Image (cartoon, rainbow, N blue to C red; front, side, top):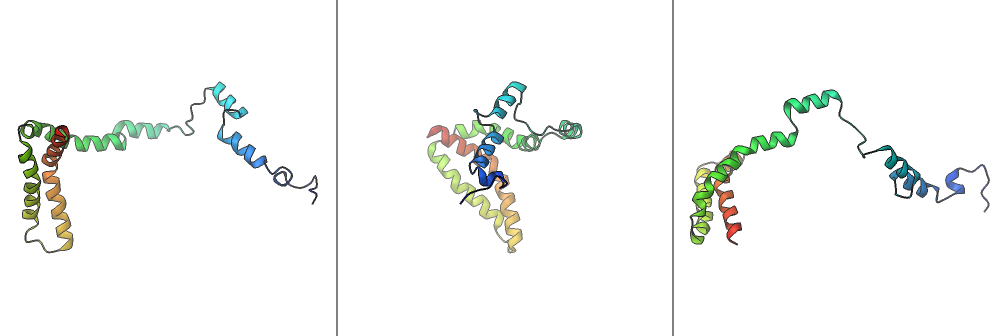
Length: 142
């Protein structure tokens, strides 16, 4: 089978798409890569517009907002460190049973499925700082 000169390039040169793809991706041997290196191209294709930057300055990034929300919990955990540090290994192990009884006491008498989920969430949020401090201390001792 003979391919005419009028056939599309992809039929006349089957490796052409592969070569084009390598040039587009910027492989080190490609001319495009050399041009980018000489021009000071940093790899960022989209820069934030003025409005986006302004909103970020006012409200912060999503990570900054999350950290600001979690910081009081971290402070509480750090405050509990001295109390947990003085516990023996057996007392640390007993804390697990204590946490389970606290959760069971909060769920006692609740019947609705949604109410149970909400009560569990509240109970876990209540014991979170102390449980985290206990786990962190157990990690240090292991």
